[in-house]
Length: 105
Image (cartoon, rainbow, N blue to C red; front, top):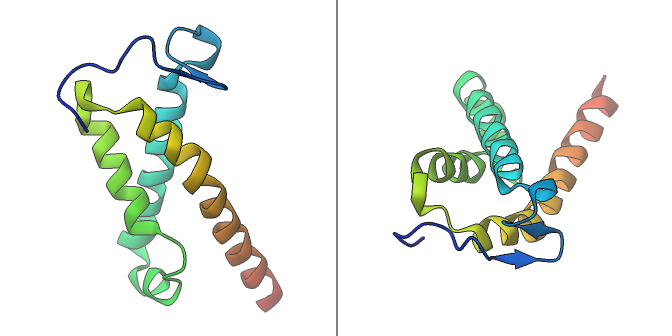
């Protein structure tokens, strides 16, 4: 993270600060929601989180805190990297957990 505002010219295919159709605020808000939901799972079902440590509940919440409280320190290239590299793995982990729980029913 850095202390200045995000570069308004930052653009990666699919994620541009200057393209209102791809507003980073949309992506950031959804990452915050994922993080808050992860925190609620940990808060209400801590043993579940311990039993499923392959799902990064804690890291998702830490990312949420960085985004929610970073204000002008949010590093958009890191957000985009997270979306491209970490979010698919998180989705896969959560889907695997859902499938596992469904098989137990």
